[in-house]
Length: 48
Image 1 (cartoon, rainbow, N blue to C red):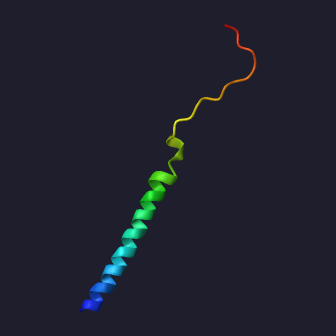
Image 2 (image 1 turned 90 degrees about the vertical axis):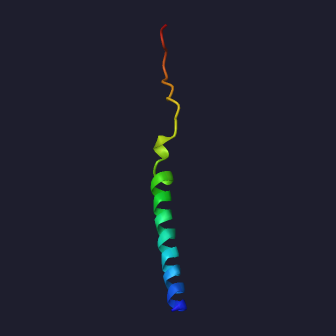
Image 3 (image 1 turned 60 degrees about the horizontal axis):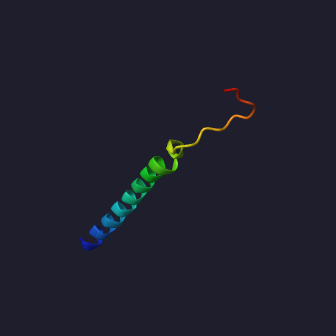
């Protein structure tokens, strides 16, 4: 019975690790577009 609980615990740890990595990739790594960026300066002459 004790070995079964250890196996179940290891399986749950692996599942939680995969779920955490999935949400980390989805929320942080793929949302780099949300960072603030400066507008590009347009070249040429500007009349004021």
